[in-house]
View 1 (cartoon, rainbow, N blue to C red):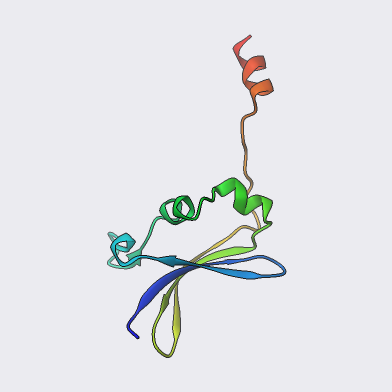
View 2: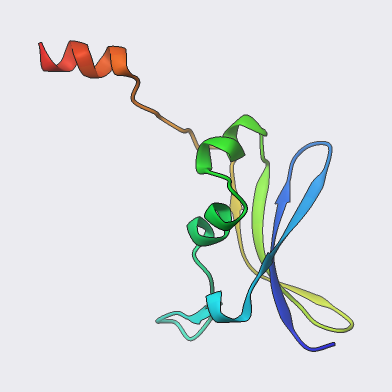
Length: 95
């Protein structure tokens, strides 16, 4: 098996792997392999809000070879907050 890329979503109680398709992987300006998380979340019918509701601890972009895994980058959700405008706050702001 050759190299493949996955996103690993980790919560306190479980870990979930989201497969990244070959055509979704790009080489960024630093010469590193990358894939926009939004694209993968959308394909799995997920949003950033879902990640916060799941109380995700980390999301890692991983290169998975035949005998080892290499973390390309990881996002810690420890100090991230999700702000979603609700209709009530929009109504107050427009008055």
